[in-house]
Structures are given as C-alpha cells and as structure tokens.
Length: 148
Image (cartoon, rainbow, N blue to C red; front, side, top):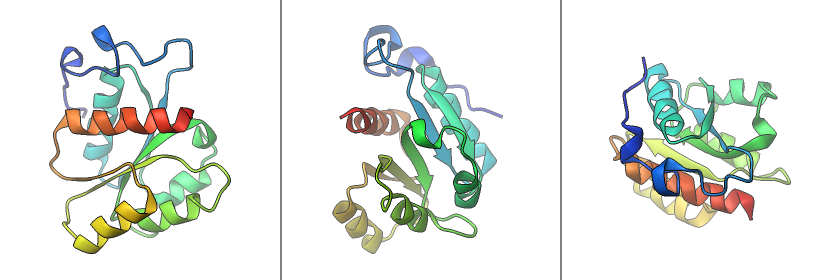
C-alpha cells in the first residue's frame, strides 16, 4: 500500500509540480529495496510530483531486468539488500560506460559508509526515516546530473 503524499507539498522543480524541463521525457526513478512497503512509499512520493518509477526487490532483479535500466534518471538504492548489497551493485554499475546517479538509503548509521559515499560520488546518503523533501531534493540533483 502506498503512503499518501500531498503532491501540492512537493515540487519536482517548478511551480505547481511541473517537471524541470517539460520538453524532455519524464524522468524514470529506479527504486531498489527489499521492503515492499518502502518501495511503494517511495514510488508514491516520486509519482506524486510527476516522475515515473521502476521498482525492484533486489540488486539481482534489477540486473536481470532490461526494463528501463538504460533510461533511468537515477536510482534510490537501499544499502542492505539480501544477496548482492546496494554498495556492491553501485560498484558494478559504475564500471559501465554510463553510470546512474544514485541516492542511498539506510536505517543503519555507519561512519565508514559516510566516508565511502563522499569519496565515490554518491548523490546522497539518507538515513531512515528521512524527510520526503530531502529525498526529492536529492532526486532533482541526480536528474540534473544525469542530463549533463
């Protein structure tokens, strides 16, 4: 079940929730989290401001799916996943010619993870629970980066 977010409270970049540049395709945000409730809530938030989403329960599911993978504007990626971790997936994806701007989310504070994220160019590392607007700011930053 998706969490109800008020679209009027969050803007995807312009007045009235308009996307940053309507002449371009609507950005697709990939969400990889093993918790279905988290996936659905993040999708609901992103969709409430006009983004499209592609949801995945694991890193392996993401890698096996060709759906949207090359067209994602950014990833929202849980650090701890069963099987391949979010960090392992990020490292693998960054070995490809086109990297995907990534926002990590986690419920576990880890100073070493903070240092790693800073050094590797992660868009943001957010600790659960986080404010929806903070996540949307990071998504906007990731989309700008993906378009440059």
